[in-house]
Image (cartoon, rainbow, N blue to C red; front, side, top):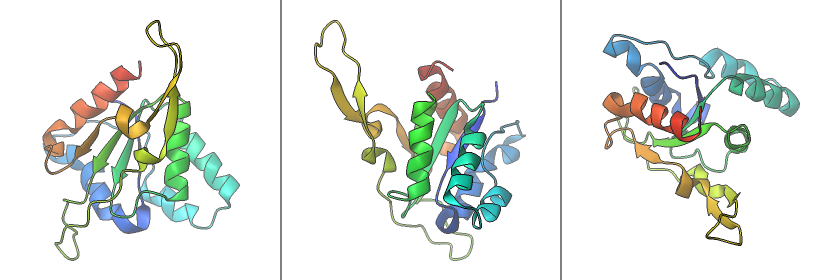
Length: 171
């Protein structure tokens, strides 16, 4: 079953690497994945106000079951990445991180530097349980799996990662 996936990424810095991931299924014989932000939407967003951007992101997240945070050298700390992660968590999406620094640039054929995981910036409170009276806090990086596209064979495993995240989120 194809899952609707929202891709969160730094457009200007990583669009080539992101498109390698977003379009990898086409080289495998194809399957339909929808529900993600595409280039034309982000090109248009450059002229929009912050409120319009929030509405656009909220609309794009509707009917998605998984958010994939594509982690490049400069992804962490970006305002709209943080907003996308926050809203994805609030709506109960499965969330995974995927490091993309090992994908070679089309222009330079070089890899990038490994970036900081933006999921480290989000602290969430875990509910109490029968064995724990006080709530605990944890970062999303501790709760959500993070993979490396190259080292973890993303080409072969991406659909499995998405399916596991969706199931873990109950979607």
